[in-house]
Length: 362
Ligand code: NAI
Ligand code: MG
Image (cartoon, rainbow, N blue to C red; front, side, top):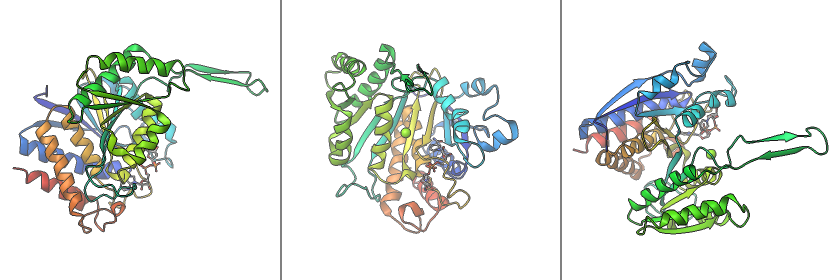
């Protein structure tokens, strides 16, 4: 069910996050105007390296209470490695949001858009159109483990994979539901049960168990090594792909990479129950190399806003924003496109072109 009023915390962060965010917000405002949605935006300057230089921390001490009042966080990018080391800026902000708000789903579309050249040969829009669903809180990325005999020839390191039934089932349920909502109704699970002989057979057994409640969803599984090869060689076989934290991490970079520039890919970090805010962001970082030039591609930011509308059930508005992005990209107008897409335009020309399309929807 969609909330009557969607409360959005806007956090542009660093670098080109500051440049693309205004167009993300403008496109959401345009969609709200056309489709009569009530969106409320509040802007925050924390989770940025400038904030860190002023306050000695990435976030204010009451950040959690502050952000808990929102349904969603609309996030630009964080990190300015010449100003603050990346592990300080990233761990002190974005990773805290993801963990402490139990955003256990990382969701990324892999969709080849019109006007965008895929690095894969002979692919056209429609050939690549799937979702990667990544478990975002446990699995291989646990901090359970340790070192002994450091500095000796018996030096030993151990790090455990943690899979809980709650953790595995909730990501699978999300993925099955997503597959069920799509025309193809197909779920592909990433495994490696031939090599990882305890946790991966467990993962497979939970997939099998859950599939009995989704008789209309067809299920396939592949070992992660051949699965990644299929992303490149046969991307059209996928619809919804689900994986553990590590496998999902790899797939959620490779998938969007098969569909073109990093400047257009969006991502959602979701707490589907809405107990905590979900976070929507472009896949790219702060791009210090192009910051200040006004040439960053705003599509990743705008598309992340589109995912937000979709997540909260504003399907008509979400479809219009996606269509508007497709129309503008499909025109391949070099005066409008940013340099990463071979154009001569800038953040403003591309951002405003999408905004204009959205406004033309009614
Ligand atoms: P990056 O994604 O910022 O940039 C990689 C390359 O892609 C650069 O050449 C950049 O110019 C280009 N690029 C990225 N976004 C673009 C856009 N919208 N339009 C046109 N070109 C674009 O990754 P990088 O350079 O590894 O990291 C820079 C900083 O961003 C670091 O501090 C890193 O930690 C941080 N970062 C933050 C992320 C986040 O906030 N979720 C994600 C990735 C990196
Ligand atoms: Mg990654």
